[in-house]
Amino acid sequence: MSNDKIFISHSSKDVKYVKSFVDNILILGLDISGQRIFCSSMEGHGVKSGQYIPDRLKEEINKSSLALLFISKNYKASEVCLNEVGAAWATLTKETVIPLLLPNTDFNELGFLDLSRLGLKISQREGVLKLIQDCKEQLNPSFNLEKLHSKIEDYLEEIKTFDSEVSPIEDSEGEEEIDEWTDCFENNLYPLNRIIRKAIPALNDGIHRIADPRIQTQILTDLSKADFLKYFWYKHAGGDFYVERIKRISSGNWLISTFNWEVKVTDMWVCMDSEMQYEFILIKSEKQDPYKIDSDVGGMSYNVGVLNDGTVVSENERLNGYAIIKGETIQLSEHEIEPRVRDDESHWVFLVSHYHKAGYNGDATIEFCEKLDSGEIDVNADNIYKFLRSLRNNPVVMRYR
Image (cartoon, rainbow, N blue to C red; front, side, top):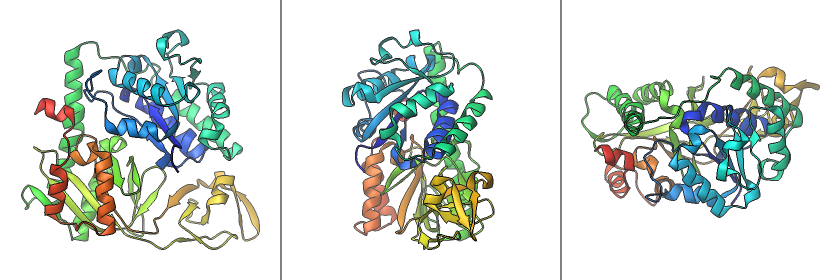
């Protein structure tokens, strides 16, 4: 669907609050597909006011029907976040650009961010419920009320465990530059490079096809343990989203993201080239058969719910919170049910950070994957290099190079 995305703007220093809200309220509570959510994490990327506004940012806002601004002292100190406010305000109606106040942020701190409405206190049950009531049509008009209330309680309990103070603002320009370098190189570029080099130590810099399933498994296993996954992207012809987590299941397939996209890896390419920021992991996610539904509904589906004992129920049953199994109605919240999704066609998928070229140039990467999927472009080192050379560098990387 077009123009139905939810644009989330926040400071990366407040990411724990935002991630909890996205996971508990939007995805699990309101059953909003992760494909509809764009969660901005641009704080500290070196974007200066009036100097550069990413094409990606503008396109995502143009696709959105709702913008949620997670306001804090960190947010107001960030020129990048303020650029996002301006872009959202210029594109969407004021009624759909909503400031949400994080803990230790007061109404009188909104300033010009008060877009003709008071900010909702997102750490209070009343604030969460009012947001959902006011924006029900843009969010999901057919959510399950019982499940939503359960996930609101989970969210409120989780954020109580966070520090009482949001992350302090960096006061000096020097400290901000150090943090920026660390985030780019120490937290993203170098760790991915080490994962790839560890798996193929006998090979030189360049693009390599990984045909050995054991090496494929080693790379994805090491990647699943990485600290940077919450900001790591997967990008394919269908769009992109945060990887967040990678988990191997008994079938040998992999689950990616909090909404459990099941991937069957049949091919893999990697790149080692830290100087140019070309590193990537490119996998082929093979077409799979639909799931067999075990509940009395029966049938087959690519989008289901899976109980903790492996029982598969229909997506409607998962959304409604109940399933009928062998004539007995059970409450699914008592069985730790989770969503599970397969694709009915194969995809080539890039796994990259925002600082790598294929991650920074999201639209171009998605278009390239479309051409790989259709066979318009052959998957080989020459074609991938040609694609990478056409991309822009992240400005943070260029600054320190």
